[in-house]
Image (cartoon, rainbow, N blue to C red; front, side, top):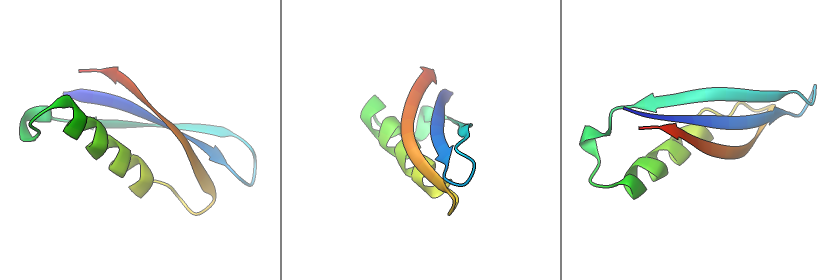
Length: 60
């Protein structure tokens, strides 16, 4: 299992938001593919009033 944290900023309130991204790595050939998948998920999870700011690797 890979665990990442996606960091966002709410543009209305200015509050920082952290959302976990967790997935099984058995479908990926290397760590680069895992990171690219997590980055794509982070962008997909962005709501209209949020700005994506960073992706942090937590554990594997």
